[in-house]
Length: 142
Picture: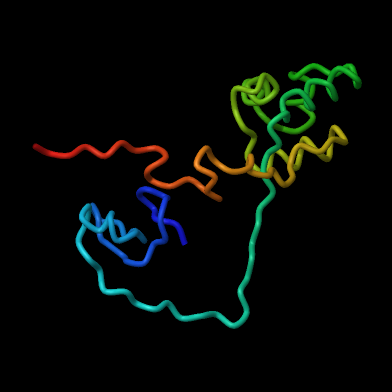
């Protein structure tokens, strides 16, 4: 496991820092106070629940489907019993549709705008996910 502050070394200790618990390497323990580790109960039957994501090009897909069918956003709003202003924002990519609206659009327009979106590779340090050190700057008081 990587250190959640610097990301460079193996995390072996847990510290408390501003109300959070972080797994850190020995060098980063100075940034917080040691926390006694508690083992979480292990579930025998882990349940994975994954809701589909809204695809990044959802607005383009909606626009193309409307153009192919010769529909305006106002007509679509009337057919789906939705507000035209909401659908205009969604069609322009200024607002993400909620899950219910996304399903309505997919069904009515015959398109897919939900699915699994893969995370873009590894970060600049070669770590599997972001660490606090990737986004924060540590300031030392003098």
